[in-house]
Length: 346
Ligand code: ADP
Ligand code: MG
Image (cartoon, rainbow, N blue to C red):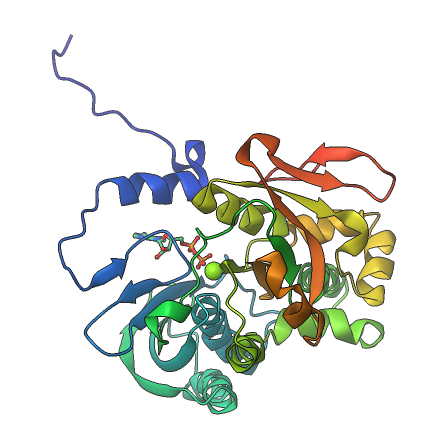
């Protein structure tokens, strides 16, 4: 028998995405005085003198993040930019520049890539952002898009995930769960099409939900409103993974707990109806759906009036001491722990 030592092999699934990032981050040291914030927030913060520079990056992989059977390339290009701008907004900063890198297989035509870039250019125009570079490569299979966004804001206005205190009010900028339900509709229509390609897709009744999935927006106008009225959230994150996960990130980074009032969580009527049709609980879709790209933020109670006058902002709960954990106060008057992954079992 060989005396050779076996190299350990651990499945990535044992760590999960967040566990893996924690593990990678634990081995990384910050050397430069310019690095104000490295790994661990929606974006990194760099100080080169003058306004700090805010940097974030996101990767979209065909078959993992999007399915080209129902994702038009123009929308995909738009979304690839938006998801990055959303992370800049989550720092309370103004997005200004993006770089775009793509890997494409020979399955894609020049016209297809033109469509993708049309969507990106539309997003850059809508958000007043310059596309300043990138990289292009062939890929063996499928399309990969990597976007980096760069923004800036005065140092004292940057909001981190880590500033929430017990007693702070928990707010969200728009309704939740719709993008997830839009995706479920597109998936269902794909299955129908695969079974019988002659049938026409039934999307017209659920325009809002499909639109929330295919054409997300970043909440730049909320950031602009904060600046206008002099409101500084104590903590902020964008909701990309679902209210439960993203609230957990704020709580973990701030060392606090929180409660969410089920009855106050904004859910669009169309989302409510569609959830019922899929035999899903609407609040479960709002908590775990993801891809809403709304801002989840906390404010000191003294700033409550400034929040009340804000368009489409909902007060959904409160920050509590860490020992209280993260709780859902249900409409039926019960209290349930909110867990970050999977579905809440009532
Ligand atoms: P978001 O959902 O806001 O895009 P992520 O959950 O993707 O944030 O990332 C959380 C933090 O971990 C960020 O600071 C991000 O830059 C960092 N991060 C993610 N993946 C890696 C990686 N492979 N190496 C180093 N840092 C990473
Ligand atoms: Mg984010």
